[in-house]
Length: 281
Image 1 (tube, rainbow, N blue to C red):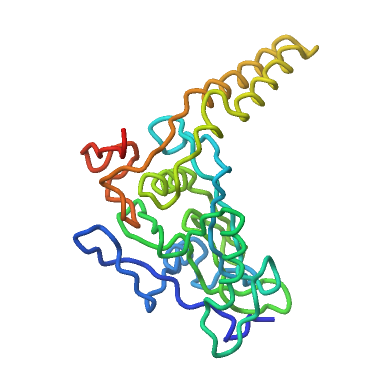
Image 2 (cartoon, helix red, strand yellow):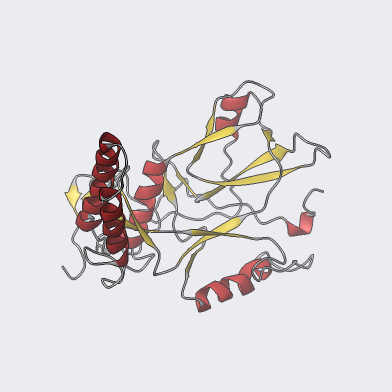
């Protein structure tokens, strides 16, 4: 069944106009829709997908991973979890008809915060796309379920899911922009939106490195074809070295207070060709 009108969220903010401070002006009356990209990919503005629900992203201070794609060097990045605004799930509630949309998720967000998570609201951290435009990290598109009962509604995805060209009539597929996603997560730390990692949790002596070294020893001792063993050991050694050498991001003065990456942002002081000064370095 389609989502009742009083359960649908407000339009998603976007920031097409940028003030001098570099902070986007959030307009609740403007929707960021991937209709143009979808129309180009499938020949229609109506996505062939089952309607779903809006979501928010959150980060737990103990969850970090090392990634390289899109970055100037291997870097520790905050992992994010998806919190769908689905009534009855993880503290989300069915919203009364005249209640604000926040009523549906505020209890769930309080629950996440009590666990130590940083809930990232849509307007907290915007996304700078390759063409310089700005959007929320969540996008929406009108859709119709290709299977009975063929309900229509809205399909929500994050800003790094890029529609792939498919034949008309086929379900739409996406490719993931990992480079853009990684750069945005680095920005979360450098702009002070997410707290930097605890030195006891990451770094050359952390548990993830110990685990990787353990698997390196296991692979080196496996009784298998010598060439295969060497390939596995070599790949695991690269992973260990990447973990040990990964950069640890810190807030940077020139980015604090921003909610969208500056044009040309690459992280670690590479902002439009100028070196940003790190805090307390």
